[in-house]
Image (tube, rainbow, N blue to C red; front, side, top):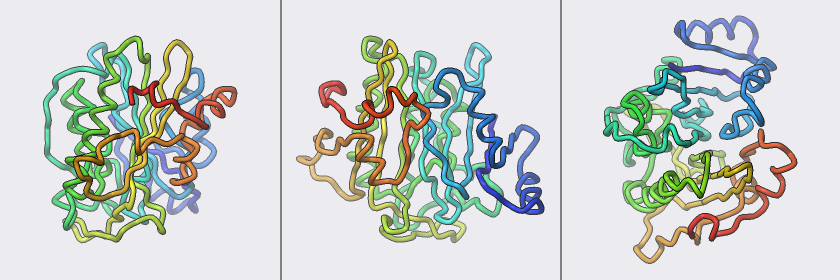
Length: 289
């Protein structure tokens, strides 16, 4: 199941063109109707979803859990000018933190994007296809795991980075999941910074599309336990890391710092009473660092 939300302001003729790209399962919401979507969520809204940037495309992929309920695999904001997602966001809770669905490593163009935005799944020239929502993060169902191989969930990464410190940080995040004394829910936002002055170059996809290569990658984490919120961010240069550079605490930053670096407003649906204090600082020991 997938949902597409175009957070754009088009003239009606162009809106109709984009609406024709979706299938019968797609829900396309324009402009102010986004607020109606957010209102469907209980409490503070979809906490994992940052504030959207006008002109980009919001996509949500979901699957059904064993109890028959829908659960969001991940969502993303896609920047068609960069042929790259601005961020990918998802959450873990006791329904999704385990499983052994296996790895279904076949890359696909994201069927939720119009065909004209599909870059091709064959390769990024000179770079690996690096997961944002990791395959290992979605092991509770085969379908969810397959969705992690959509190209909207990929970023051009140096192999040494993708298979090195990025994997280490992803593993650290997953280490939190089965500790019930640590959290009830973990909200995760990941990506490469694709602001025009923060890319290394453009590489080319297998269909010849120019795809932005980020200079830096980030993760923003918000954990909730018993109504108490704690957050931390990580900011990594996109490069090779030596063995003595793998201490993750050296790359920890506050969410406020991460917002200043990326231009992304993380966890903006968090109640204002909590947001300010939660995002301005972090404690390493709270995160096992």
